[in-house]
Image (cartoon, rainbow, N blue to C red; front, side, top):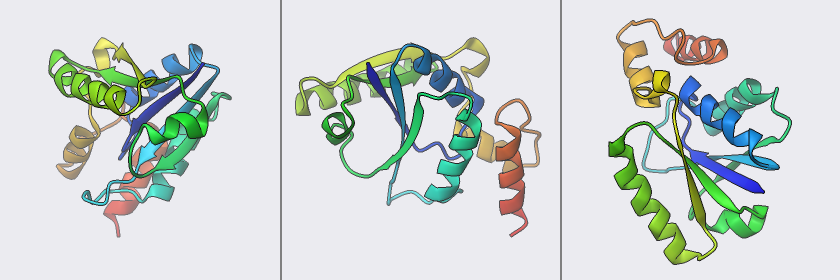
Length: 158
């Protein structure tokens, strides 16, 4: 079974990596799809996000990083995807994820969605929180991999 885990991953967190690790164990191939959203101004370029995810997942041989713009369901045929994987941190995440799953199914009947609960220690974690904490000078060790911290510090000095 080929699974798809989409997101902006700006930056990738240990919460994302937990879902990637667990989803890779139940799939033949896991595609981590980095969304290109023209309306957002990301901290990292698309190429930087690809590199950070690749370095963080290099120990998982069945994980492949891809980029996409447009409709998620278009990737189902292109990559022979059987289901989308979405991480849920709290009940509040379910509402929007449920709506997106239903819209995807409306556009493509085979577009199944699998929900994975994040581990309790990551239930509060988001890329937005990491960026905010970092901008305020707080330590983000334990929230993101060391290479992400290094990349964020490099951005800060520019």
